[in-house]
Amino acid sequence: MPIYKAPLEDMRFVLHELYDSKTIAELPGCEDFTPELMDSVLEEAAKFTQEVLFPLNQVGDLEGCTYENGVVRTPTGFKEAYKGFCEGGWTAMGSSPEFGGQGMPVAPAMLVEEMLCSSNVAFGLYPGLTHGAYLSIYHHGSEEQKQTYLPNMVSGKWSGTMCLTEAHCGTDLGMLRTKAVPNADGSYSITGAKIFISAGEHDLTENIIHLVLARLPDAPSGVKGISLFVVPKFMVKDDGSLGQRNGVQCTSIEHKMGIKGSATCSLAFEDAKGWMIGEPNKGMRAMFTMMNTERLSVGIQGLGVAEVAYQNAANYARERIQGRSLTGVKNPGKPADPIIVHPDVRRMLLTMRAYIEGCRALSGWVAREIDILQRSTSEDAKLISDDFTALLTPVVKAFFTDLGFEITSSALQCYGGHGYVRDHGMEQYVRDARISMIYEGANGVQALDLVGRKLPQDGGRLLTRFLDPVLEFIDANGDAEMAPFIEPLQTALEHLQIATGYIMEAGMSNHDEIGAASVDYLRLFGLVALGFMWARMAKIALPKAAGSEFYTAKIGTAKFYMQRLLPQTGALLSAIQSGSETMMEFAAEAF
Image (tube, rainbow, N blue to C red; front, side):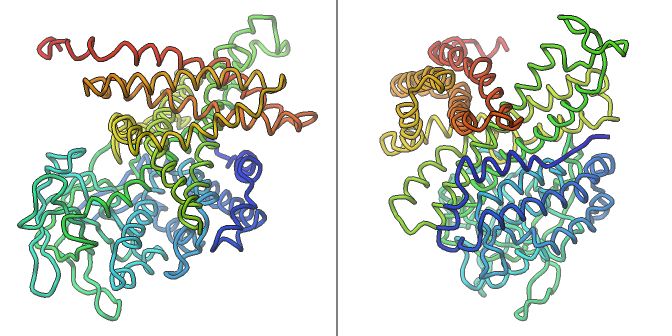
């Protein structure tokens, strides 16, 4: 059986020491969120995820969801767990108090989200999609729509979805065919079919509020002709009670590789009644409020599943005896040594640990900037934070999920054949992690977004929001004690700057250069960002290491990252500079 224990010590380190949580309480609306309160929230979240959600993870995978005549049932225990999740106030955590939410800052909420993903990522998709739908309505809906839908979505009584994908179009939403015909009463009749709709139908809530992309009859072609509509499963009466069933039906659920406890649905809309959110033909703007939030959440999914896989691999490596140490017997009382004595096992474990703790630190930076963006009264500070989060969103989504799959695969490798069979639960983590690289914008698309849109935006202004703090840190830490961390970071940063210049210059004359370099560039960027995180964490840990296992391990992991993982940036730079010729001149018929 797998194990999971929320990494509270490292979470507190990120929240309090790396980013000084006291500054959160200085933001408007966050006055009550003291470090002590945030610690209490994390501790309670750990209890719920460890004791309630984690035991259902394998149950959800083994049973999956069931479909019969349009009805979808979630696995054993999910309904009871969801009820407890709502009663504990977890659905209301990051929502506005105006609609019954707790108004919690993003910084601690993102750590709770990580625990949710580690303990049961399939379960977490139900409230996660609801919060994304909440945000779209909150930011773009009318006052009437907010009052109609948000209180019950915040409480968890109702859930939400995002309905984008159609069988013939996924990434290219400009091709979608779902129609919205205006009615005399101001509503619209929605007709079309959507696929791959997470939490599109289930038995956890009384109502499901679908956000649906569709076209008006006179809409322009492409993405400029897409509008967003709110389409409830059950109509909502004027008094807030539920009325008749709307014209939306689940026609099937997918039989998937992983996240089997999450219902992935095909939905048919047949003259379903809906109401426009925002302006006509501006649906993508409203939907991107949800999608960008979901992309950050998907990145946290990669981190969360990686964490639980690492914990199990490390535990197994300490207990499993197999072979003898290359430098002599370490366990003379037994026929073999534990596999953690072997260099390659340690390489895998340290690689997992370095990536996980680096990603947690980077997500903390992004969370802090989102809090500033949402709450600061300084327009200059909000602009900086907006630029930063826009730049980092594709990095967090793609880099974290790439690493999530790599880490779960390495964790399985530590088990050998025992990892490949179901008993230990490791193969589920590999399967669950894989989808995060695909949905909410496949990782290749995220790389194109980073290189093709974010880098050149406003003359490269967004990139400076990342580069400036890194350069300032390097300039301020030139002492000998920090040299093992600063020198590798400086070299990697130079690789990033050279790669950026190459892409910007080569891409001006040949756009294929942007596409050819994009995935390697995003990885290079991610590695440098984690290098900066590890240098910062090392600076904090160095004066505290004496007599402390935690800070000593921080320094050791930082050195491993700098010496064994960050040097990948040199190879990535060489690959980027090789250009697009070898891939684009290869004949399509030869594949």
